[in-house]
Structure formats: C-alpha cells, structure tokens
Image (cartoon, rainbow, N blue to C red; front, top):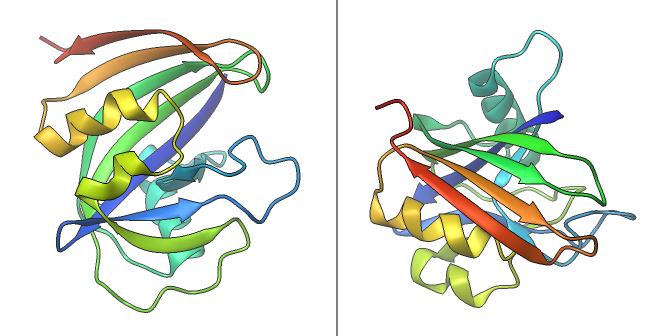
Length: 156
C-alpha cells in the first residue's frame, strides 16, 4: 500500500488546488485536487506534506492540522493510505508546476470543479470543521466510486 499526503491549504476563504493537466499517464488527469504526494523513506507525513507543498507551490505551511486518514481501494493503480491535512498559506504568486495548474479556488466553488467522487464525500467534512475522521473509499476499475465508510473520531 502506498503512503501519501494530501493538503488543502487555505487563504482568505480559498483553497489552493491543482488542476492535473500536465503529466502523461496521470491517474488524476483532468481532476482538481489538493497538494501532496508520496512519502519518502524515513520521512514523516508532516515532513512529506510540507516538502510537497514547498516543491509544487513554493509555499510554507502554517497551522498544519491532520484532519483525517483516507484509505483508497483503487484496483487500477494500487491501494493508498493518505494522511489528509488542512493548513494556512500566504497568498504569494504561484509558480509553474510540472504536475498541473495551481490556483486559489473559493471554497464555495470547489464542488463545481471536476473532482474525484470520493473527494465530494470528504471535502464537506473539511469545510464544516468536522473532527478527525477515518474514511475508506472503494473504487471500481475506471475510477467509479462504489462505496464509502466513515469513522468520525476513530480514536475515541
């Protein structure tokens, strides 16, 4: 199982999003997603998410908060365990990114974008300030969401 991070950095009611339109053979092609990536050997999830946002957007995160853990069951690409974060970031000019187009998107417009169906399930939890949660998202081949299960405050 792959270990990854995903962060929705916020500034003035907007989330920093990436429109994945630049890479060949991209499992996220055409989708809008938060920033993050794969953990390197000997790297903590917090170190990973900070490094990825720095590499992709040139931004330093503050008020980093682990909001949930996502378990993706993806028959096309392999299963993934994702550490889901929110944070604050400065509204600085965004650089060119090799993986996609970066843009600050008003939070109330995010659901209008082409997203993974599972993102439509967990993003409202981030927006509402829901407590820490664990969510399992099961996809069919081709990326169709089959099932979700949510455990709010799983440590209780």
